[in-house]
Length: 568
Ligand code: FES
Image (cartoon, rainbow, N blue to C red; front, side):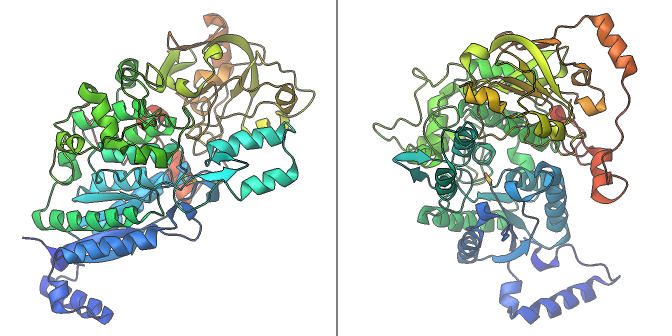
């Protein structure tokens, strides 16, 4: 039934010889014919000494191998790129598509009947899923899981929402060198991904909702024994999928499953990056994410999960409250429960098995939401003809309708140089504008959209300001921050036309972001705009490929040649 070792033979012009040679070499590892005759489950190893978020990957792999072998199949572990947020220059997003290409091509090139992909740190789950979707082999995803929480002076801490909050306090002079050093050792107390509702947690919840991983896989803490039992169970499921050759991602990723994922993204107060990644995954299928439909969905779907940065708790609390199955149970008719999972079950069966935890406060009922609307809103207007995004669940309510004077920074470098300059002409009512920080302009769309509040305002007690850019923002951050302005300024988007002193109006209720400059003047500025030269180093190699092929945020920032022609 399966192809096992016979699959995808190296081409020597004689299939019999190719198989003979393959077996001769792999026997050097000590395998028996019995082992080599079994269905094969490939397992991606995304462990790296540079990636503490994936520090438990070796144990996950061991457990998954156990599950595969208990079910009569043969596991083969192979390495793929690993990307850690704080260890990749210029930004992890720059490398997501490279990782997706690596995994896709290695899954295609090597013999396997099913594959287990392991990911977690922000870009790795989307990259692995994009790859799996394009290779369309039966796939089980195992997220590495979130860290456990840290503690400091009686306070619960979490990376990286509290990294930013406490760093801002340090910048404001509210805590000293000694304390910030102590905090530095307590923010990430275990291996695993950031334990707030950042991009890693968001993508793990989306993966579980899409049916690509087992129930509870998003939330079990990374160091817990339960995480490794889940990995073993995932191995068993993958072995079964290898034998029956399904279900494949193309059978699981339907219009309904994408809609479910969008509903969960809204209900968890998920990361803005989640929408880019979900869009990129959809672009690998015949389906598409419609930004306006996503926004409309957000008006119906409340934020129910009380996690930082929108709420109070952390991932382990979400887990102990029943995790994604309990959330989907609370969402009720907002989820299409006929959607299917890797086990061949429906979400209805998953929801029926959801644990009810008396007295838990991490997952709210629909009658008592954290926010009556979803976490993310899509903005449009003359500044963002193809859309922009705001996580209004983590913004300051009083700034959601605001008109202010633009203070423009030309690039991330310019902002770094000038934002803390005591001579900078800026007040708390101004709108900080950052440009040339988009997919092509930066390049790689860094998480620079969380512009720091100028030090002199911080010291005067200012906690939030309206900030707008074509950059992304860490899902762990909070504030009144408009992101992903599309098209980006480096390709001539209207953000390139803003001048310091112009007035900008944000109106989240009306889903609008507007530059209050008359049309004729904007046309004059557009005509005078000079095309951006390619970034340094983009004359060859991956930088060239990136610059040539990167798509805008509304298309998921995939490479144009990797997406599939969709239904539109
Ligand atoms: Fe890896 Fe946050 S840095 S998930």
